[in-house]
Image (cartoon, rainbow, N blue to C red; front, side, top):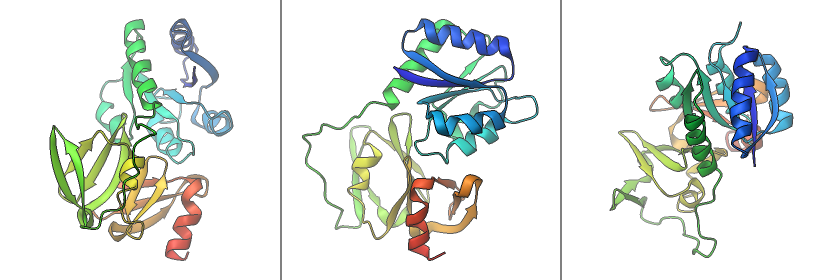
Amino acid sequence: MLRAFIVDDEPLARDELKYLLLRSKQVEIVGEADSKQDALEQIPALRPDVVFLDIELAEDNGLELAKQLLTLDPTPVIVFATAYDEYALKSFELNAVDYILKPFNEKRIQQTLEKVHRMHRVPEDTCQATPSPTQSGKIAVLLDERIVLIDCQKIAYLGSCEGKCAIKTLEREYKVCESLTMLEKKLNSDQFIRVHRGFIVNIDHITEIQPWFNSTYNLIMKEGSSIPVSRTYVKDLRNLFGF
């Protein structure tokens, strides 16, 4: 059963979404809020699996709330549920698993829940051998039925995305089926550090550490990306760089 939290400043919209989620018999509604502040007070304590988030809140912005939710550990899956379609690209930059439009459609809600469930599955066979860190300076990944070798020196970061893993290099991005945990075992621990449940970064490509919400940080990478550091990994980051 998925634990869901709804953020929307329109009571009727919240009720409609809650009704459709409960009809699926796959979701428990653990809380709801009509503002960013109210959501930030409740979500860390309730620890929902998924947050259904409107973008246009009365005096707040749902995109800004999503950025702050990414710093939580555990990080909830984010689904934007809104009447505005122009923010779709921006939402996926924030690792949202889906973007659904009002008025809500029961079939569309079911598709979203299937995506969220996939995010919570563990893809690895527990009987698999544990890979050793690469000795060649490259890692091999399966990409479109091809084995591609990626130079570890050029990797800026690795991040979970819709049940897959995105490997971002200085030149391009690769979407692979291996999980972040499996890829982490292939990497040299002296060069890479996990900073979030969903992100591992190359320490050689960190150019700036920016203080962020609730004693966390954002890492500015050499290729321009901003990567959140969750509270769980702040101590490791501080110890590494001595601040």
